[in-house]
Length: 378
Image 1 (cartoon, one colour):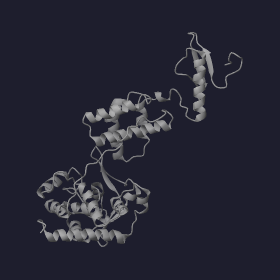
Image 2: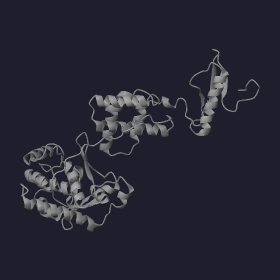
Image 3: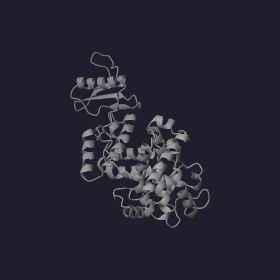
Image 4: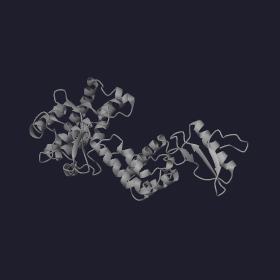
């Protein structure tokens, strides 16, 4: 449209409506469509200024279509999750967090309607309603990840999840068992689970990794167990083996030679038959589940006089602490535990077997000392 001096505008057009107000229009550089300003203007100058601002944003590379944020959050979040490559259990957890804790507040609105004050109020409301802090942190992290994609897609200008400290929480210090306490629980638990307790404490394997072990994963001659997979349980009760979360999760872990007689006895009496038979089974010969092991763990823990705050997973923490006291470096600990949080951990994941055997040997010394001292420590 020509201006009052007969010269055509370089960018956009301005016209006066029947109401007397002014409308600004321009061609969207992202879609090629003609866009109108989200509001009309009292004067032609106001409309010209608005177009100048839009043109400047395009030149600077910060332009965003005025109606971009009108995309509904609920469908956008569903689509975001649908296109993520996730293990079945991780997908279930994310779907649950989205359905229970995010959508009730933001699901019916638009992306643009999610502001930092609203996110802050939402987080506070979750905590005040009794939702556990770990779950609230997970919900915040998920919301932030979804909105990061909205920023990348140029649907919103910046992510409103900008609350300092909201993406983590202080994990309470978990209890660490002594070697004598580990053996006290192993002595008290059903015979079929004795090797499970000992292997958990002295290799730091997770329950899912232990439950998925096969006979062929155990090498008694080299005192090594090979972690290849982990068992996961879906909400419908289905069990499935899955690959570790990272390359570091597939790893050989040495165990003390003092466990060889225990493991040999277990193989003879309790493991499933065949090289691919599961090393640990449920009470009726089926797959080992947390649900069919939990009561046995609770009973044995009580009989051993161990604190009721101790969970089975604390055996992993115990093993890591014992290995550290045996002289393992941070990289060696990360390798034994299957962590890959840094590039260095991946580089050193295949540490020398001699050093790993040394760590296992030190653990064996602790076992011999504790067993020689007896339950009373004398």
